[in-house]
Each structure stands twice: as structure tokens, then as C-alpha cells.
Length: 113
Length: 109
Image 1 (cartoon, rainbow over the protein chains, first blue to last red):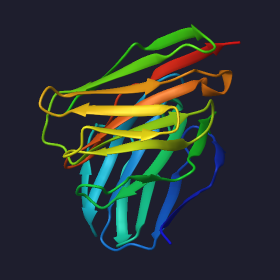
Image 2 (image 1 turned 60 degrees about the horizontal axis):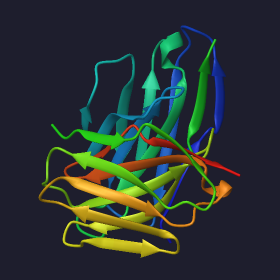
Image 3 (image 1 turned 180 degrees about the vertical axis):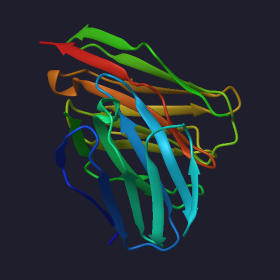
């Protein structure tokens, strides 16, 4: 079956510390992978998307980076967190085309203190 | 660049009423449109997916329509219940998946 794993569920990090959030997908090959962020009371903002290994597009300038070292693994990173990086981070995957539903992880709630 | 707009941003209605949530998008070159529900502090729950070749989809009290040429979709909720209170998100998938900012729905008991 097709599943997506995202961890951790919650994270509290001090300003200036590094970040690594991981997302893995099972049950599909060559998916499109996405990282979104939702700030408090705001909509889902697309941060990065990837159509293949090492093929990553950044949607907004920011303090974050993404990597896709394997087909079904997507990692969101930061070298030094800012207070403004706090939010709810969601990983998603889809196989483009009609009828291809997008699947979302359970999300990571990041609080930078 | 695809832009997705949801109207209204917030809505409060008495229990039992039928209601319509609106979603519009600027680029009609899409594969799908998907409606999600998000409860406070939680992840996303997929409600309905409409393929670009389809006009509507139904699930229980929910009906979603799609007019691709005009860049519009509606989510119709019949006989609303307090448990329907949540944020409803519209997402369009073209070369990537773009979300609207959502409609916060509150059903008054």
C-alpha cells in the first residue's frame, strides 16, 4: 500500500540551531515530492518540490533547503533556524496525471524558541 | 504562475443549513482539483478529488464541482453539522500542487 512517513511530529529548537525533517514514501516509484509550511493562522505555502532525485525547485527565498538523496526520501534542512521558521511543515507526494490523488504526511509542528 | 483563491475566508452558519465554499484558480492547465479538511493543529484529510475531465464528485453530504474553463470549483455541504467545523482547503495540481488559503467554517449548534 502507499504510505508516507514524516517525522518528528513535534519539535522545539533554539534559534540558530540546525534542522532536519525527513519524509519517506512507500508503495510508489518516482513520485513528485513536496514540502509545505503553514504559519499560524495562514495557508499552506509551497516551499520545495521535486520531480526526481537531486531535482529540486525552490518556490520562495528562505532560510531552508531541501534534498532528495533517494527516489522516495525528501529532507528539509536548515543550518541556522530563525524564529520565523516556526510553523507546521507538511510533506506530500503525488504521481502527476488525472486521477492521481496527492497524499500528505501527518506534519511536523516546529517551534523555534 | 498558478494562484488559488478561496472565498469566503471565514463563514459561520447555523446547524442544518446548506452552504457553498468557493475556489478559483488562474491557470486552467490542471490535472486535478482536490478539496481537503483541516482540523485545528492537525494534518489534512482528503475529501474529494475531481479530475480535470470531470464536472463533479460526490461523497455523502459533500458535492464538489469543477468548471475548468472558467477556473472555478465549489464545495457544497448539505445539512451542515457542528462536526463540519474546520478549515477547508482547495488544491490544484498542474506541474505542482498549489493551495488556496482556506475557508474557516464554523457551524453553530
